[in-house]
Image (tube, rainbow, N blue to C red):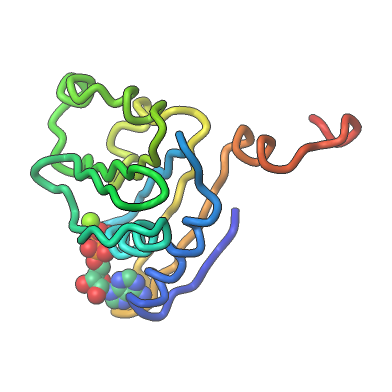
Amino acid sequence: MATFISNSPAETEAFGRRLAKRVGPGSVLALKGELGSGKTQFVKGLVAGLGSKAPVTSPTFTILHEYTGGHLPIYHFDFFRLQDRQSAVRLGLDDYFFGAGLSVIEWADKFPELIPEPAQWVFFEMKSENERIINTREDDAIRESRIPLKPHQMK
Ligand SMILES: Nc1ncnc2c1ncn2[C@@H]1O[C@H](COP(=O)(O)OP(=O)(O)O)[C@@H](O)[C@H]1O
Ligand SMILES: [Mg+2]
């Protein structure tokens, strides 16, 4: 778990830009945190960091926004208003999650069973009006694919 303290919307955006350097085709970022905790702010940085100038807003009612113009297509989901598992399945999530773009999902914790295993979780907490605590947890699959382990280091 890695912790980042943000003191402004701009700092949260900068954190997203930084994380953009560590994603590639097929990466999945699963975001969790209450309303106003900075998830969409983070996605703005992520999208800008990938070189897209697309305007970013929460896809609250449409569930999915797609952004192009960057190094990768970006699929921005918001599960907040997703009613049930069936409507989630109808979206054909796996085509996005296992496609050539980056998927980022707000409220991913609403349907955690739909989030593929090698996802990176990002947790947002509101500390005060302008302070946010952002924790990241990487699944082993991501970590292991990035840093080649020597045999004696393996579990
Ligand atoms: N440190 C911070 N990081 C992110 N947003 C912040 C911060 N401080 C204040 N804010 C405000 O909190 C709100 C975050 O909104 P948003 O990113 O849409 O949250 P979410 O998508 O999690 O509901 C914005 O109004 C933003 O200006
Ligand atoms: Mg949002």
